[in-house]
Image (tube, rainbow, N blue to C red):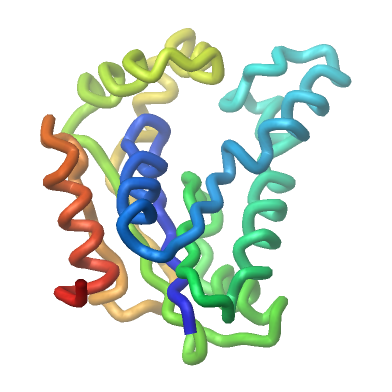
Length: 197
């Protein structure tokens, strides 16, 4: 059975970068919520006369957030049982706080946590200044709200825990602050795959 690995954490932590780096070395497909939702979110926000690049405001969350997670999880769950592992990327704040969420998701395809190897990579950075530097470095119009409301956004950057009923060995806290990205990439790969080449 393939692995279902979640890369969770705040915007700018480097979730996608780490997932793609490991997937480039291992048989894994990356399902990034931002990418999967983007066409629908742009259309929905535009239809409501709102900024099509907004991905953080209360209006965006009301109109698009849950749709994004549904699209992402439907795509990921559809690949359970195939040969490549599944890397799912997104903040998953509300979902990670619900102990029953992962069980409900697997039940949608008739599976349980006993049948699917679920792991969680919690990606973070050392402080708000590093987040700002990384977010500025990606030059994305989708980050405009973050900069305009930095105090509010930075308040969401604290450490998080996962409420899902997973053994501690299946959850890793990865500090992605090191300037050499290979440090975090190696840590993530070792966590997911152990020493198996």
